[in-house]
Image (cartoon, rainbow, N blue to C red; front, side, top):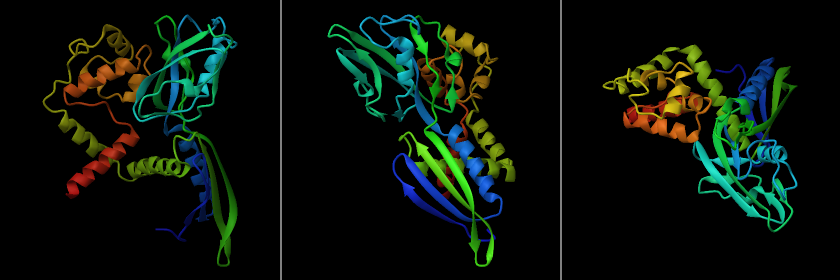
Length: 322
């Protein structure tokens, strides 16, 4: 398989940082692998972020709150720095505190399955015992960067936030020469990965490698995707995919938003992934949950993303081997 067998070594690792060595590699492969992994790690791993906030007594982001040192814009900037780990697609969190003092992320009320990774992150400063800060935060899983403009809400007081979902904060790689016997034209790839603590650096590297592997497997054998499509089509048998959104008894607001992206029936709806539905303007987490419940009642599901397809494929192989 390899002209020279490469070795993988963990030079240093903790919960937020890892340095990994891969050597020897054929000349030029260090750049190929390093650049590809860096791009995937920074853009394609699932993470969580606060995507919108509703603050009691606040109508818009340029408002001010009596007794609070920071204006709403500053509070939003602080909320963007709060790192959260979720074990579900979305969750609504609440914060309700009285002054005086600094309000930190640890004051957010979190249910089971939700972890605040930087609890000491400051959110606001309350000046007196009479000052109260109460807010509702929507946290969602996603990939990469989601601008606030794509989540504009018609509900008064709901403020969308630019969301950085990426759990990997920084990836650096360097290539140096290494030797095998008397031959010196081999690459040594050093990868340095920094995360927000929601994922282990080595686990992040593995997931990045799996994403690339899935695409290379498709290039090698395009029938892999076609086989999965056949299985999915078989599972959909017996259900009328031409059912309109109105016939599914979905909320009018959701139906209008789906019509805006040319989704008019059940068949077109299940061709979308859950992430795509969540990114539609005026469609929030609660609406997505409602739509998902409706189609699951029919024995159907949203289109799976690459990570989900990989898991499904593994499950099928296990089932077939039994």
